[in-house]
Image (cartoon, rainbow, N blue to C red; front, side, top):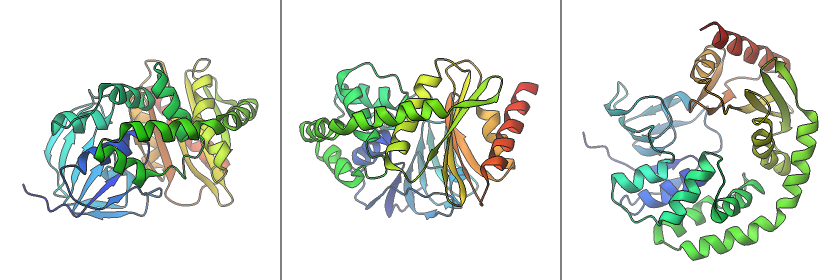
Length: 288
């Protein structure tokens, strides 16, 4: 099947941006990094870490992802061509290998560590901090262009300068940890202001700390209208797939890895409603 690709639409984290930059070496098309997915209609695109369950409509497109439990290749009922390989730690590594693209091992390792939140190398720690200080304002287009051109030195220099603001994230992380509480005996959650740059950036750091203490950790982003979105994570052999499935039945888009994923409300949900929906999903998990 030959798909007419008119744009590349990618998840806006380090992995998605790097993957888009790599893919743009062989596909000349505009890059898009949408922050809002639930009402998005996509056609004739190369989609990186954006799948049908996360958007309103997706058809006639190439879907490249590493989130899932089983490999998948071929065409689905919406005429999408899939390349899904969960054995990869990062979609950027998958893209580099599939199309045999140059991708320095240092950067490959760093982005894999950031995407799995296992920060070991100096570079992974730098780029993690650089992204967290302003996740919404991360210069995705510029970073992808640097990846496309192989301007790794310039990208590192940008990250080193950006991370200088990280102490503010550490301060907000402590505040979020103080707000955390139990949702169920095995689940800890906290809320953060979705539109607050610093709280949003600190939410992932707070989750990493809480994952050392609780089997399941949930960060819930809230705004004036109610719940915006959330992230669910575990470091234990629990398997979060059934939680995503249950949340999709309760009015959310939801999906991700066995150990980390997210959700977004399709319509306005109060915090109380979302907490109850999460309890129901976790209880369903315990019954299986």
